[in-house]
Amino acid sequence: MSHIVDKVKIELNVNTASDSVRRSVIYEVMHMEKTVARISSTGEAEVLNRKFMPYDLYLEEEDLEYDIEIRMNNLNNFYHWCASRVLSLDRKYAKEILNSIGAVQAVTDRERADISLSYHCVSLTDVFWVRKHGSGIGKASGF
Image (tube, rainbow, N blue to C red):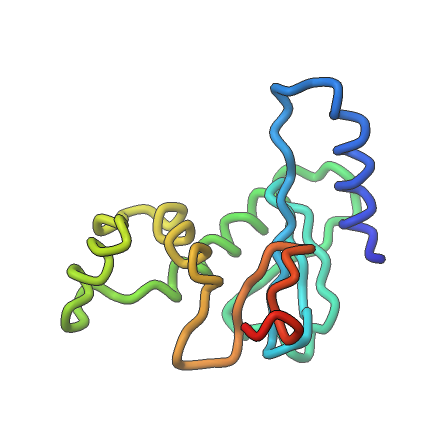
């Protein structure tokens, strides 16, 4: 198991006593069925297979355990990449499609990323997608 998953499990075990602590989510960037990178909602990233990474997604594995600048850049880069996968509003029926799923013309990268993450960042233009770690989505589940 990777170090990012182990660290999140440790953090969750330590923080179970406090209900107010926000739980970290780990996203896995997929190239077809290969996991190529992991990024947590705290910005900690792990690149597992640089050769298959999306060319427009840059994640940096920090040397220091809590380098906030690197983590913020990782999150910004990840959300920007996810946001770029949302149906653009200049496409025919784009506004109707977004309205039908309750996503009313999101403005910020984070809002657009949330829309994209709701459908696993799937795009018709490439083979990349995103899943939550441990979700079981993939080959075995028929996705």
